[in-house]
Length: 238
Image: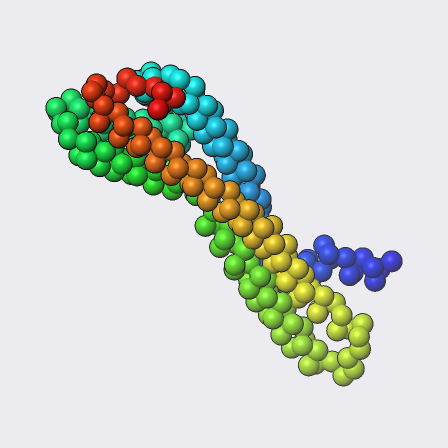
């Protein structure tokens, strides 16, 4: 029983050198922060998808562009990225129209630039935290390996003064060192898996938003070329 207790994970951590314990503490903090980011990003991505889908339904439901713009302006903070991108494009389009600019190319170029700037801001927000997961997944195995190397070196330094070295004397020191590697992998594997999954989800969100921007630009292009070049047309009418 004593041998089993001495070889328990908690006992190995407590008996490790202070350098290895520091490495383990760093890995624990990184793992906790990683899991917090994983759950936060999961909720954020789910919310973005829901809000974008909801706005797309409203956009193609037959409401006028003016009504959609008014709603998007009033709902700027609670709305989704796609709605804010639309609002940015419509805002620029209206400003140009108020300045009595009627040339279609100028109107569409200004609208595209406004939407592209808003798109980039939204994507920066959506991607926040993703680089942290990538960093954790990349460096924690090496941090754990450093702890293992240091622990093994420390263990063999202690064995130098022993006249007789047996497996029973070697095992605890090596086991202490290997715990750091295990903790590094425990922190890295979920972070890498989440990073890959969220990166794929964010790519799909970006592609969907870019497609919407092109569709909205096409609607405006047909709108400005019509006899009544205003923003009162309905998307479903084209």
